[in-house]
Length: 299
Image 1 (tube, helix red, strand yellow):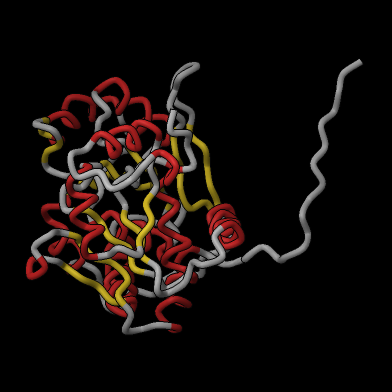
Image 2 (tube, rainbow, N blue to C red; image 1 turned 135 degrees about the vertical axis):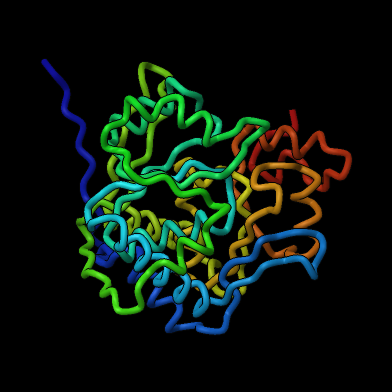
């Protein structure tokens, strides 16, 4: 006889029925002058920094630029490592009612074709180069097989893109059950599969994060060395909702020495680390952690 598993719903709190864009609006209203996003580098004078008001304003400007090229409900892929513009585009798409398709920058032709083709991405934002690979040339190789893809924007032209938005463009009303992101599985048991996440899904994750970490507030900061294109990228949202500081490492990815340098400036920080990242941190010459700091055994 088949067994049925049942997990009763937790109705102790109400799920946030707001969009990701509305969450940013609320955070900016609560702490307009607080630091929201920093492009982190050990050279303090070289850091780029955005307050919550500035991040909202730039996200709204980028949202208007998006609506000059896309309709609400269309899909835009992000093919880049961790850069501040990735975050701004995430919020801009949320404000414009456009669905983000997160794409691992390490994907190559066959994998890229699958993700962009299955998601029916109408546009893509990409970095010029990643790990010695020209991203535009790689996209040119596969673009002929992607009939839905009509817009390609390089993050190198981000300033020109955002400036193209009309100040008169009205931003749409985005509902909690509208799709916000399409994230792809690793494909370990077959081809990667696209999982559609609504704004409500992302806000529920944010709410659950607050439940698990009761000390998360505006005095907290988080480093983002894990790929924003991965599901771990969603861990940024609770920190923005809390009015906390989000730090994007200058390298755009995980480098142990860089993590230690950033912790010198922001010691009250957390960061998401997969097991392989933990192993590299423990083995780094500047290691200041032990396995027990990560809830792991010393053995």
